[in-house]
Every structure is written in structure tokens, then in C-alpha cells.
Length: 133
Image (tube, rainbow, N blue to C red; front, side):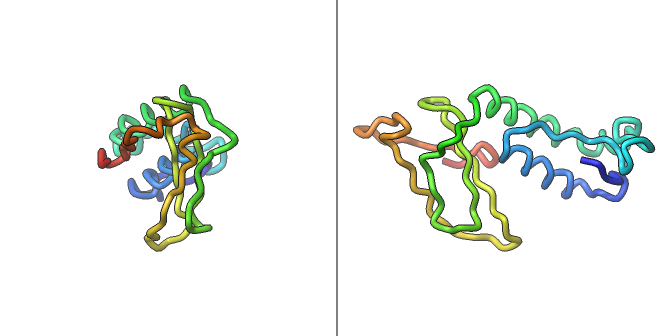
């Protein structure tokens, strides 16, 4: 991300981290022109965002270790909700991204058999951001 991070709020940095998490890529910060005022030279900036690094980087690492899968076997009922899949079996992760500014209620249909999930037992998904199931 090349931006003037002194103009970024903590909330905007978190939005960037959430988008990075959706795609399973590490966020990267430098500067507005790739030369002057690097993010990492300003402790006020990286200390402000330290909690985001501590929370999101382990989640992004988990997705990376699980491995991105090109076929999701999952589809959203709403076209503005994007879906990605990482891993398989017990290390299965589904990420979703709302491309709108409004909250959207949607259903996520998952092809359990194609994903190798047990059909004879309940499968519980945990929201890694909130801890909800």
C-alpha cells in the first residue's frame, strides 16, 4: 500500500487488513511515493496499528498455511459478496467480502460432499474475527 499513512486512520488500516485477510495476503505498508516518510520510520503510526498486526497476521498466516483453493465449492446468495476458500477438511477456511458499503444479509451455500465434510454429523464453522459459531 503506497499511501500517506499519517492521513490514514486506524479504522482505514483495519479495512486494509480485512481486505488482505480475505485474499490471504500479508498487508504491506511503505510510503505515499515509495521513497519519503516510510510507515516503518514513524513509531506513532506502527504503534497505533500494532493491535491490528497482532490480530490479523496470525489469521493471514493460517490461511496461507492452509493454501488457497481455486474452486470454492461455496457460493453466496448475493452477487456483491465474494467468496474464497483456503484448505480442506478440518483445515477448511471460507472468507467472504462485502463489496458494498451497506450491511448485506446473505446465505452461503457450501457443497459439503465436494469439500469432503462429513455428511452424517453437524459441521460447525467459527467466525475467526468474532469467535461466533
